[in-house]
Length: 292
Image 1: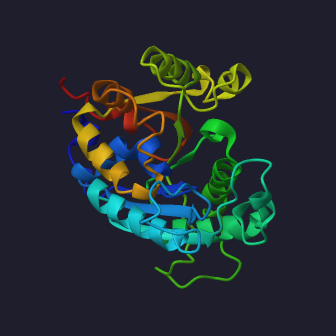
Image 2 (image 1 turned 30 degrees about the vertical axis):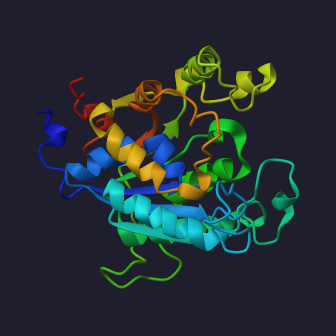
């Protein structure tokens, strides 16, 4: 077993994603693996997913969707093995160019310094070794994904600076700089293969125009780390299934053959954006490759 896995019981992991279910798609298998190896995981969700889909009207209404999705995320976190879930409480901004971008309570309208301060305070309190968030593209350019990436990247730096007032020893105001910052990625080449597999299976992929497809995902050269999560695919899928309101039975992903879905979900990709301190190894790259 690689040295990095011998004892992760003291490893503290903090994630920041935009909506309930984002944590599962990009890093659910890796988080399940880390939890299984003993890490303590805190999940932060920037918005409540207020304007997401409602796959079945018996599950939620537009008026209570935020509360329902919060509960879905708590159930999903329990399946993954995360110790804690926190919500920043912003409203979902919706897709780029929609009226929801202009809602005064949306993350899109929130002052950057306000969001950064909230995230930095959580970093100082949780004192994580490793932070995971969205990558600069947001996967498919969602305003909330891009904003969460930018705010958490800034908070990662700010949290290590001295507080405005002198903190009491051991208090949550004590500066803290995590050791590792990762961006969860969807490599562009992988996205294109996945879209082609959908077409081969007779399924129309989302963002089906060529222009949209060409801009989806992270540039391959930005990806530093891949993690084989085959041994945790069932946990990952079970966690994602907790987000019932978002699991459209007629959606393109639901129409894929199960073996294709499992294969797509079995590798997760990251950019190691910051590595600092006494131990600067790519910790996620050191996780074991599972037998198939």
